Length: 334
Image 1 (cartoon, one colour):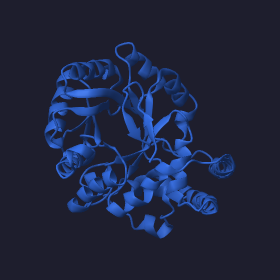
Image 2 (tube, rainbow, N blue to C red):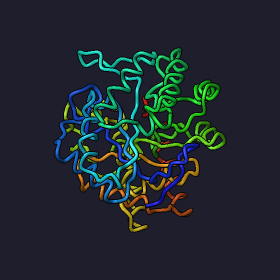
Image 3 (cartoon, rainbow, N blue to C red):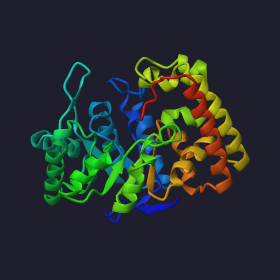
C-alpha cells in the first residue's frame, strides 16, 4: 500500500480509503439497498488488515447507521491498528425521507456531538462540511468547525463538494486541510480548476466514487441494472439508464481490454487512473463485503504507465463523442 500526506495535516494516509456510504443501507433517499450488519463490520475490519488506514463516513449515510457500524467495527480493531476516521456534517434527517441542508452553528455542533457518540470516539480525526449548502451559511459552518478544532472535538477540518470560489472564502477564515469531490473517468469536472487550485494551496484531495458508483468495475450488465432495487439510488441515475447505459457499457468493455493487457482488474485500472494525478491524496473505495475490499485494496500498489493512460484517454474520447451525438443529455457530476 502506498501512502501520501493529506494536505497541511501531516497525516500519512493510504492511497485507498474505505468508503461507507453504501453500508448505510437502503432505508433513506440515497441508499444502496439493504445491508447485512455483520458483513459491514467485517468489511471495515478487513480493510485495516489489508493496509487501509482511514475510513470515510458521514452522519447522513443511512441516517446515522453508517457511523454506528463504523463505531462497532472500531471496537473490534486493536488500538495499535486504529484507523483514521473522517466524517461529515451539514446534511440532516428532517423526517419523511427528506434531507435537510444546514450549516448553522447550533446544528453543526449538535451533529458533531451525535457523530462522536455514534462512532464511540472522543475526537474526530477529519471533520468535513458535506455540501456547501446553503451557500450563504458556509462561513458560519466553517467557523464552527474551526471552533470545534480548537475545543479538541476534531483534529483536522476539510470540505466536500466545494468549488474553488467557495474554498477561497473559507481559506480567508482558516486553511482548508482537504477537499472530497467526486472524481472518476465518467465524472471529470474537477480537472479544469479544482485540482490545480488544491495543488497550489496544499489542500489534500480525497475523491469519492472513483469507480463511478460501480459502473467502472465491469460487473454491470443491462440485466443487472434492470434488477436494481428501488432502494438503490443508482436505479434513478441517468448513467445507469438508456441511452447512456449502452454507451457506458461499451466504454467499460474497452477498459476491460486495457486492464487485461496490464494483467489488472478493471477496478484496479479505474482507481489507478484517478491516482495518476499528483494532486490526489487518496481514492475512497466503497465496499459492502470483505471480499470486495480485498479485491480493490491492491489498487493501492498500482501505478499507471503512460501508454495505458493514453489508451484510456482514447476510449474516453470515443465515449465523449457517443454522448455528444445524443444531443442534450443529463450527465451527472456525482
